[in-house]
Each structure stands twice: as structure tokens, then as C-alpha cells.
Amino acid sequence: MSVVVNVLRSGDNSKPNPYTIAVIANPALETPWRSSIFVGDPILNSLAAFQAAVVYIESNLFANLPGQKEKLLADLSIQPKVRLVSIFDDTLPADTGTSLVGQDDVSNILVARRDAFAPHLAKYSIQADVAYAVSASPSHTRASAWFTSDDDTGAGVAFTLDGSEFSHRYNYAVPGTVAIHATASSLTALHEFGHAASSYTNGAVHDLYVDSPTGLNNKVGRPIPPSFADYEGTVYKSDLTRDGLGYPPGWRSFHCELLDPSCPAVMDNYFLSRSGALACQHDAITRRFLRDRILAKIGRP
Image (cartoon, rainbow, N blue to C red):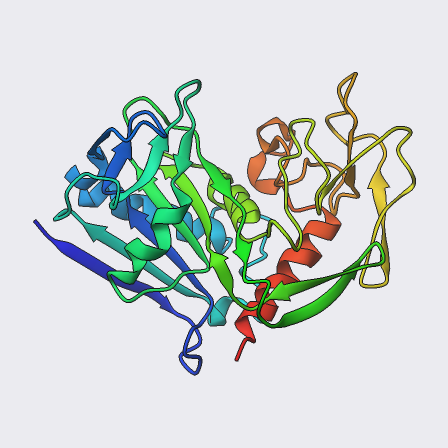
């Protein structure tokens, strides 16, 4: 039995609380989610499998996969400032206090038990803005994420979106959380980061492969207007045709202009990219928003 905590990237050591991403071997699965029935996660039987998952997540986040074009966290104003830690602890019991992942009872989706993450990380004196829980569930392999719940009582960097005032808050009430399988590949880690790094109250980054509700990167209505949004005085165009994929009949969603119209957005169905999934990038407003949000948190006092 062992506890292995690794600091893979030290981040900004001049800060008392640098922007941090944590990757945790999930100690216990709730089977199914919200049942209060817990079993040990098989990931704790293989440190090597967990370490391989950590290597994949780091590589995807920091644009080190061969042919990867989305380089959000590889930006030199961001990359050196991000702390990345991993935690493998196979000494814990399987109970409600240690379970970070539940198995959905109507699909093969892994669900992050978001309220358990911060207390779990505190056991190791770690705070994380975004946290991944890695599972080796034998039946559920699809990842999912929850947005960050911002600390809206605290300070941040103000911004405007379509004439309304918001803030890239420095701190969170509940961190962004991801449940991911040990076998995840392609852009899965980066896609889920897009959700988890965004905010319930200050800009939610939604899935674009389904008819989603209104958020930072998705709007609802027909006909599609030529302008998607005004973010900080810059007007972004709408993607009138969902380039490369097309909007299905009956959809009300529409998206922001793509940085590369030949590939779907990272938050869309990148598996359908004719150039391969790793050629996909964020759409224009999502890239700008996530970059600004991360930079605000990196710069917090």
C-alpha cells in the first residue's frame, strides 16, 4: 500500500496559491451514482495505468500530442505558471468520503462527485482550480465534467459579455471537476478541461455536439444572426453553417466562428474532423475567454 504525490509542474512558486490542476486516482466508485453504494476503483490496483493516464492528460493539456493544434495551455504566458500535481493513494477505504466518481445508471458516463474533491485534496494540503479523477471502471468509460462554482463574493478581473458585467473570479467555491477513464485518448482531457475551467455564473462552456442551452460558446435561436457575441468590445461572428458538420434539422443552437473552418471546435464532435481530431481548435470566443480566465487566476494575489 502506498501514497504517491508527484508535482509534475511546479507552476508559479512566487504565489501562495498558484493556478493548479490535480490528477487523482479515484479511490472509490459510487455504483450507481447517488446510490450511496461504494466499491473500490480498480485504478488503485495499477499505479502504472494511473501514471500512463497522467502522462496522457498532461500531454493533451499542454499540446504535446503529435499533431495537436490547440495550444491553449502551451501559451508561454500560461504554461510556466500552471502547477500540475498527481495523487495515487491506495490506503483509503471505499466510502462516501473517498469516492470522487459515480457511475451513471442510464449510460456509460462517469460522473464527478464534485463536492468531494476539495475535502479530498485538503488531505494532501492541495488546492486545485481544476481536478481530474481517473477511474478504471470496467463498465463506464465516457468522461464528463462540471463547471467551476466561482466565489462570487470575492475579487476578480471584470469583463463584459453582450453588455453585461461579469468577472473572472480569482477563487472558487467548488473547483471544476472531471471524471475520466484511464483509457481516455484524443482530445478528451482538453475537451473536459474546457468545461471544468469555465463557470456556472461567469461563462459556461457547453458541449457543441448536442443542442445545448445558452452559454459562453452556444446560443439559441433561428434565424442565426451574423454576430454571435460582443466580448470585451470585440464582436465575434456566428458560425452560420457549423462548418464541416452542419446544424441538424430541428436544432436551435448556434455557435461562434471557428478559428479553423476546416475542423470542428474542440467542444464539438472532434471525432468527425476530416483532418483528424488533434487538428481541432477552440472556436474564437472560447479560446479568448478561457485564456483570459486562466490568466486572471494566474495573476491573483
